[in-house]
Structure formats: C-alpha cells, structure tokens
Image (cartoon, rainbow, N blue to C red; front, side):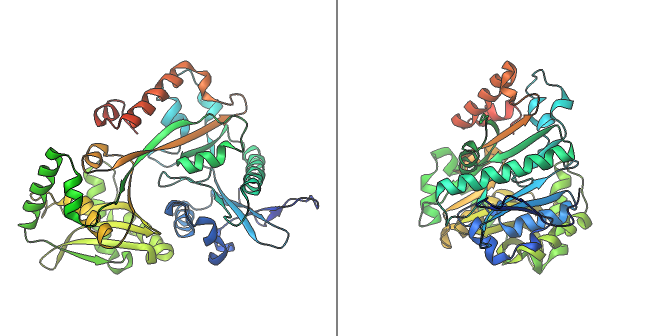
Length: 396
C-alpha cells in the first residue's frame, strides 16, 4: 500500500487537518524537532527516517495540523512482514509464548503504530498545545490509522515497547487500555561527579569485580579514541558483524555497512563511537547516540582474534561509556533490552516497556487466564529486578 498523495479529512468544521504522507522527507526537520523534544531518540526524526529507508515501502505517517498549517502530531504506521527476529510480531512474541488459547489468524499479521525498531515508543505531539488538545490530536490520528488498518486487512492493531510516558499518552485515547509487559530497558542514572564516586556506589562484591576488570584492561595496552559513525564505516561494520555472528545473528560486514550508511545519512551528527585501539588497529567499538541528556547504547563489536583476555567488553560497553557520560554531563545511559544480569550488576535499573494489541473479534488478550498469569509473572520479575527470574522466563 503506497499513498501517492496526501489524504486529508474533509470535515470543514474539524479543528485539525489529518493527512497521511509516505516519507518524513515530506516533513521539514525544523517543524518535526519540537515534537520530539523531551522524548526518546528512538522517536526522533533522524532515527525514524533511517528505519523508513531501511524498511522500504511498508511505512507511512499520519499527521495532524491546525488550520494555519502548524504541525501538531505525527503518528508512524507500519505494515507488512515483520522482522526475522520477531520482536514486533505480537502473536508469536507474546500471545503464543504465554501458552494461552489464541488463534493466530485472529491476531496476525498486525498493523503496527508508533514505532517498529529499537524497542522504545512514545507519541509525537506538540508541547505547545494543552493536554486536552494533545489527547484530541492523538485520538484523531489513531482513528485515521484504524481506517488504514481495515484497508490493509490486518488481523490486529499493536503498539509495542511503550515507555511509561508513551503508555500514559495512549491510555487516555483508547477504549480498552489494558497493557501487557512487552519488555524492559536497562537505564543507568548518572548521579556521580566522578568515576570513583560511581564505583563507591556499587555493592561491595560488584565494586571489587569492576576494579579488577578495569585493572586487567588497563594493563593490556589499549587506548580509547572517539569518532563519528561516518569516519570508519567499513571498520565498524566488520567489528559489529563479528559480534552479531558470535551470538547467533547471521550477518556480513556488507549488510552491516548498509545499515550504518543509512544511519550516517540521517543521524551522523548524533553519533558517537568509542573505538578500542591496540597500537594503530581498531579492535573494538561501541556505537552510541547522544540525544538531549541521554546516551543510547546501540551496538558493540570486536576483533575476537585479538581481544578476549582483558574484559574488553565490560570496559568498552560499560566503564568507558559511564566515564564519558560523567565527564560530559549526561544524565542517563539507556542500555536497551537484554543481558540484564550484566547491566544490573553495574548499577542500571529496569524500566518497563508496555504493549497493546487488539483485534476486531478479541479486543484484549487478557480474557485468557494463562496470558494474565504470564504477564503478572513478567511484571513481578521486572519489579524485583531479579536476573535469575528474568532468565528463567526467557525475558524479554
């Protein structure tokens, strides 16, 4: 489904003009930016535009403007085949895994709204209008999205990996605001003036572990340099591919380079790469995005033929990032989902990410008791921040 022209509501008495466009290239950066201020990098124009270009045609955006043309809201919508990892396929990822009684054809495929990458969703609404009008804008865009869901013929509508603020935005504008736990991201709050203060904050055994890992790393002769993503794409692509392949996600440096080049085109100015050097050779790197007062840790990579004996991963992915955050005045490091044991051990806390899915015949999966029990167990695990429980229930 490609929209050859922007489509508008025809109600002349309507306070807001609702339209749909094919690309964020049709929305100027200067008018989009105010909508994303105070929100996650993963709903920013640079990130969403990169995902649009990587995903291809199964993307559009519902927009709301006032009668003078001011942009009040943008709602990304996505359809088509889900990614191979399946994190945005709600039937396989959540309903089936709960072992409840669900019929796949009632829920899949799903029409996705809000976001479809990076596991962090909030809604893009103008901060210059009152809360009541924000609710009106979002409700109108959601209703418009439902019409396109029917046209596409999807079995359900889903909004996945909403932050607490995103879930509060949606809760006010839907009929059945029953949210399940879709995941959790690990966030480290930066509240120290020095790395030594950070170490003092850790529990005794964890502090001893970090000091030992830092000491071994320091004696290995490495140095850390900073770069933009666009500075050495081929080198970074090979290192990232090494890491992905080691942990079971088959890829190639060429495939990684395609994604990185797209990110350079849209978000290079927000990128920051910490490069691990041994002599003049790059043997590791971590890609960060800097957005307002938060560092978003994206991807790490290594040359495993040259590293592995000096706790390189923990030093590069955690201690050097934390040191950089402290020295440059950032307030948070968002480490995303997964590998919770390592993140919790180094001071991060878990923040819930919520999901919502309904179909015409089944407005909520909470009618199934097994799904309810499964969801409650996951919520308890996040609340307790117990890595053992999180691993046992294959979280996320």
